[in-house]
Image (cartoon, rainbow, N blue to C red):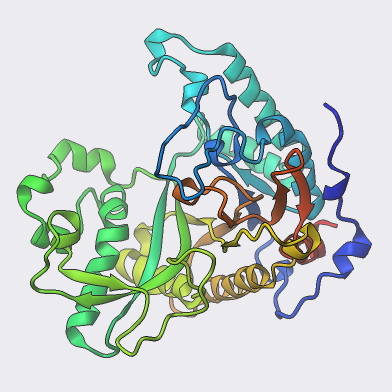
Length: 401
């Protein structure tokens, strides 16, 4: 493969330039704690164009698609080497099943080229990001679980009451968390839906599990992945105008409280505010307090910050992302706090930043950027490390360099 990524190199001198304003380093975490980054198949184009193309008129803010995106399909080897040079332990990626099963089902054939591609991707990860400690863990797990581990990754958030101290809004917060998280989490832990949902949702819309389904679901995950980005406010609404899922919750969600105050600074996306306390609250006040020892090992599978894509900025200026750096620092601080909780510490085993590089952000197209690595879409998807990437390299260097 032609080498085009000299712009991606981070050496020790550059790492030293990454200013560390937050009193946290990776050595404060357990020695087996996993730090990683993530991307997805279509968003980063970890899939061949011949197998999936998206043309949706009028639904993408900038009229774009993910057919090329960050072009990780051809650049993944260099990206993974870069992850290793920064000190990351793991890379979380998704599989494009249309590349594995182009006909949509096993009976219509398996694409050998797709299998070969993903085998090479996984081999590259093992040879780089999983070079030492994690490779041993994989071997150990294979001995204990012949078919590996199965988990679930849930999109979550944290809710605060719209009116502080209001009893009805506090109850609305509990319902909101059950409808967002508990709907999926409680069945795989206990084999049942949350009681709030059973009470609020018409039985024809939430059929009870059979005894056989309950037994199959209960304790069925080896690990729990949680995608946490932000928090919102929840207000009680006894007479909702919405129907279905939104109406059944009997609440209203907003991005500011009764006094018009947001939870924190707003990112490039309207829905994303910096609220690291919410990660702590979600782990301790909801997951731990509600489910206790039923919770398996937890991984924060996504956590990230975006900014508006300003095409007028020069690359060197666009790579200065102090807000993203602060976002990750502050969330790691609260994550560590949850793991050191005196009563019942959160059983968190890993943290994955979202995302490795700028990519196609669904309905927002390329109007926002989530990456630690800047992608120059006008110059063959050339890579440039942002300030946040340099900070991560310094943060992880205490253990890996």
